[in-house]
Length: 506
Ligand code: 93A
Image 1 (cartoon, rainbow, N blue to C red):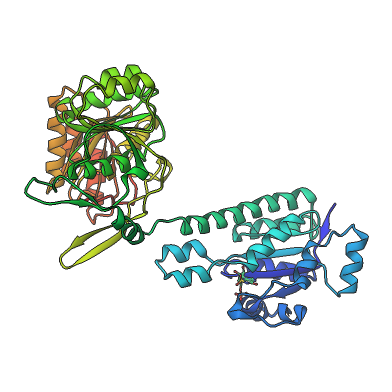
Image 2: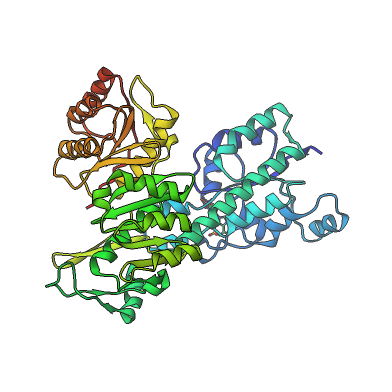
């Protein structure tokens, strides 16, 4: 059944884009009810508006925390129009029916992202607005809910084409979007509360301090403050050393980038082998092939169960630590035959979202680098565009770049790390190192993809890379000389994408 809008309640945080919709509704003779700032906005358009306080006979209290939360508001939204008893109560309590609710919620996520203090973030948890959205969406049978400014235009067109009416189907679609808005909003709040505070983690873990055999070198003392039992079940091996812990941390961060079955091998926190394959066994074989020399004594990690056949393969290598979410009985028997190697089962626990380290006479704290740009976020800047496979390889390479010491260049093909240049003081050196390594292990770089952790200050890297056979390049972009690198790529006929996001790691 069509619903003609008589009364609307408008309460929006950001007012942009609202004016044309309000003006159109005014043409249809709609009565406006509104909260403080929105009311002023509508009044300034020269359109009559009833303050919500006049409706509720109550002022906005507690600094605005309670503005619309009132039966006179919610009664008018939730009343079932066809139900006689609901109608009687509306009349008895003098509640007007509200048939359109327009809300733009307090910008919770934006406030979190701005780095605001906790108190300010908490104040931006919208209670009244979210309740209005849910109430109006629940009663989609009779009420239109607009829970995002993205929907203003659509409603305007709908009303214009349908003489101010909406259909049940349309209202139900808006209700669906409204519950999407509200669930997204509450998820963002949950994520905020669910973050581990690294300082709290540190304080709690002080009771769980574990004296290490030594620090980074035998003449240095070391202690780990933390609860390893909470993160891993140790199936075999000696205690984790200081350097093991550092590598295990890097390994965990790297493997968490991958959803598909993947194996990674790390040395001194850098990946020297990574492969994503349909099976864990194949991932292991191809990860090891990247650099079997460096893999000796490495830390190995996978995101899938290690079975007997895979364990037999791994068993051929001398390694320090192996981490997996699960092992078959057979794999455990094979892998624990040697006493010293550390075999860890990783538990599914959340880690702090921030990291800190001491420096000078203080500490620095930062968010972990937890963004990675999907292929859709890559902008092709050259005449030649990357193929779908190249885009996947660029994505794969960028995940590794992000977890490798700067300056970094990573080569990848078919979901496999081919070679990288790590921790160099110039990007050209990182590139040359990567080429030399790839060549020394017999890899053909023709058609291969390359990622760089930061932009190219000069076109030299693109020139050297393409001469070596690289066909697609990913870099954040942002150098004042970007165009020179793009021109070079065009001259060489190779593809380049920019991501806009730098991934230094020190
Ligand atoms: O603090 S609230 O949770 N309490 C309320 O009762 C309430 N009603 C609407 N926030 C509330 N709102 C929000 O106010 C809306 O979601 C909107 O974001 C904002 C609009 O305020 P104003 O019209 O004063 O700019």
